[in-house]
Length: 289
Image: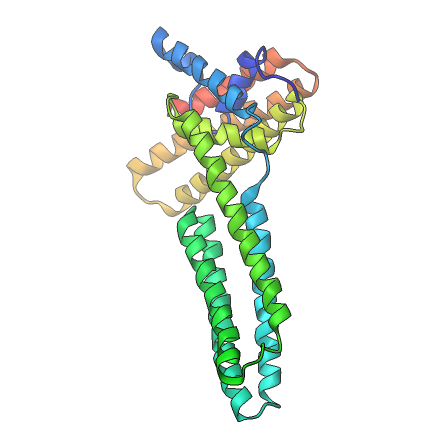
């Protein structure tokens, strides 16, 4: 995609629009803050261009593996219940225990997905490991009672492989986030830095203009969503003081939405100065509230 350096003035605005409550660098009145914020953007550009930080979406890959693991686990559980209908007493004892093991494993993997979304990566890995342990208990039961492998050993191997792939992607996600966090540790707005870096990494194949358009469109979506929420509050609030503030906020966001919309045709026509002015005015409107 090329270096971000040399595009810093325009892309500084693009980064800022990723955070709907952040004001423009121009709103920083003192020179020290202005210099610091501009330096932060250089850090963002450097981190996004760091080849040691992959642009792979490891969270989505982990979710895919774990979702497939749940499907695999359900298939094993269904197979066990089918075998239970035709099994003898000894085999039935093993199968009954295994049915419980795999039912519990499904619940554990499902919880691991919630932990993953909550960024509790340690908790997610622990839940996956516990699910694997449940599957192993089933195999051990067949060995102890019948001295044979279970009838679904190969299915269990597939389930285990999917779980281990999920853990591998979570470990890679942890490493990636640590690198980004370390890189952003000395910036003025650490959360903005991290979200901006992730945005650039996830869209690394896009041109600079397409990146800008995507960022502005995301901001337009966020502003529209916030404005809709404010509208709902206005309709459901009877407190006159609060209503006055909500109507003011609604007006600010409505104007901001109009300005952001105006920036998109300017971007299409490569009138970057005009686009920056429109987006900048919109962000300042929201920041001044």
